[in-house]
Amino acid sequence: MHQLNFLTEELVKQIEKDYKLPVYVYSEKRLLEAIEKFKNFPSAFGVTTRFAMKANSNKNILKIFNKNGVKIDASSEYEVYRAINAGYKWEDIQLSWQELSKNLDKLLDLWIFFVATSLEQIKAVWNIRPWTEIGLRINPWVWSWAFKAISTGGTTSSFGIWHEYIPEIQKLVSEHGLKVSKIHIHIGSENTPESWVSTANIWLNFVKEFESVTCLNMGWGFKKAIMPYESDADLQAIWKAVAEKVRDFYNETNREIKLEVEPGKYMVINSGSVIARVVDIVDTWDMWYKFLRTNSGMTEMPRVAMYWVQQPIIILNNSETTKEYVVVWHCCESWDILTSKLYDQETIEPVTLKEANIWDLIVFEWTWAYNSSMSMKNYNSFPEAGELLLRTDWSIVQIRKRAEIEEVWRNEVDVEV
Ligand SMILES: Cc1ncc(COP(=O)(O)O)c(C=O)c1O
View 1 (cartoon, protein in one colour):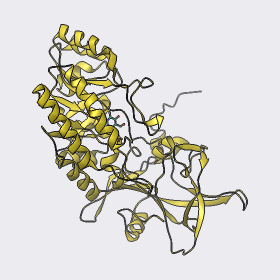
View 2 (cartoon, rainbow, N blue to C red):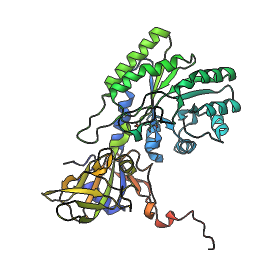
View 3 (cartoon, rainbow, N blue to C red):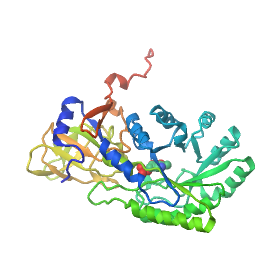
């Protein structure tokens, strides 16, 4: 059975007294430990870490990253503004996104580093500022294998510029004086370390195509061990292998290539929990399933609902007996279910938990990434949950208030009908 990750039972009870549930709690200590890990990579010519801020965008979390020298990978203009609002300087932000923005001129004027993800975006940049230094996100014929929904490479993916357009890009940039200084690749999440190392050569071949490139951004996308059947990628071993490839590239070309990474999940997923409550227990007769209904769901934890992954669940009570439960959530949606088979929403898979009572506290672990930021808040009109930070001195501060019900309809305009 799973144990609490970084919280203690006393803290959970204290939080229950002081805040409305469900609520997110993040551990500052875990976050700082993860940042430290990323500072110590072996490298040939340097590694810069950017936080893929889509994973969790709370201002205070960004402030912690900023204070500790982690730069930003933004995936929309709005993420850029959010990072700025949290204190980031423009030059510490890289933007690569799906939209051909009407505001590109403003963004370029502000000196963010722009990574073009389509031929049209390249053309838009030279129309605005022909001499700009840009990056290129390339879609190689390689993708993350774990599960289609988390892959962002290959023929079925619209992310990045298809690699066979490279000759066209070369023509475009040389005709218009753009300088390509970075190649950016991200083939999706949950890559194996072996695939990452073996693909580094393919990425370096893209670098070879552009004389002016000095930086290779290898994206990220490693599984962090969440469930007992998973294991952490050995970052040091991966980096040693990648650093060797970069050194080989130098020996061959005399070009020193700096690396960049932009982790989301790996860096932060173990730093967060959601505290909620069991709000009912129902069954489909004795020989079928026993369901624990909880007062949380895809409103707070869309990652599980969208990708059918699993996460640890802990019931807080003194029960000495266990039971098999299907844990379901509070939304009126058949897929708002926590305990399905991995990557297979059609098959429910009961889990063994302490025998639960209605109103018991329930903690969902490893919920930091792609949850609060991806939230399907307000579905069924549930107000947005609050966020708390457990500081290194064990004090708790609120970093986002829980929304009031009026905020759910705040922007609706009352017209006569
Ligand atoms: C461009 C880009 N970089 C980095 C990441 C981070 O990936 P992960 O959270 O799997 O580490 C993502 C995630 O979707 C991404 O789209």
